[in-house]
Length: 223
Image 1: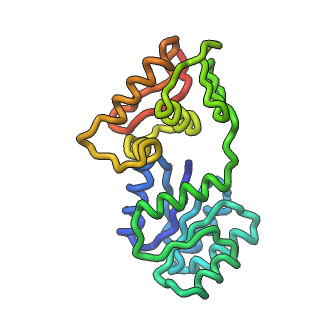
Image 2: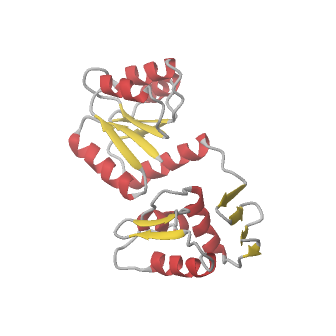
């Protein structure tokens, strides 16, 4: 998932880049409104986090222009003002959500994920190589053989499958599957992945891979 952060405060932009990156997102940053309009026109982002107070062109002007140009990417506005008029203005111009500074990163992350879920209907089933996952019935099979997964293992596999080819950090996995903050001293994610691998990768080639220092990914790799 790709997130475009438009923020001129260096400290805030660095904080968002690091936090979103650790949570499994690819992050690009722009520091002014003119650059934001130019780059947002590509429409290649899954979500835009847009500050209101920007040099050259403010966030309202950026939002108005990208919507006029047909860019429908979900936009989360950031502002230091908590007035009703500000919120109404943003929504009327086409913002999808609104967050007041200062904010907690956990709240911002939750809002970004909500916007992404709204924008992309989830598939009812997925197939990766010879692995078949049916989300409705929670049935999983590989090479036609059904895999007996626990509820937690199914949630973990579903998360990896919905982000096929993306390396997911341990922090993201812990948050999404266990609803907990990841602590470097715990091995709960690694243990769960080990157990899941024992079932899913009982056949060749393996589909669940570890990227040392980054996290885990589900993908089919060339021999």
